Length: 160
Image (cartoon, rainbow, N blue to C red):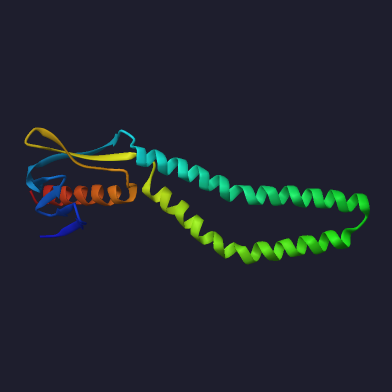
């Protein structure tokens, strides 16, 4: 028996698929497909949170650009470039010192995209019935499970 995928609620082996309260022998599976399910509140919240995070990450560079332009404009009118360059150098050093702290929010953003922005459903047909085995908003996990089911069914049809 080959194990293709296993977590706390789903197990896909070369003999059966166990998910969603169902245990279906691979030999009984005639067709596997996926569908997009109804969007949940959690998925909507993830999309809104992603937008807010992108906005918060975009604002500081835009504010800095406005400040640099206004500082250059002011220095040009006064002819005081030395003070303007000192201020710009200090801001550049400060920005470089704070750059490593961007790792945390960028990691959140990356994980948000990995989890996806829609609900995925995994369906199989066995004994002439269509059965939904899995419904999840986690795109990465869904992809792993779907591919495992496909491999198990492909291996079974190659043997049969």
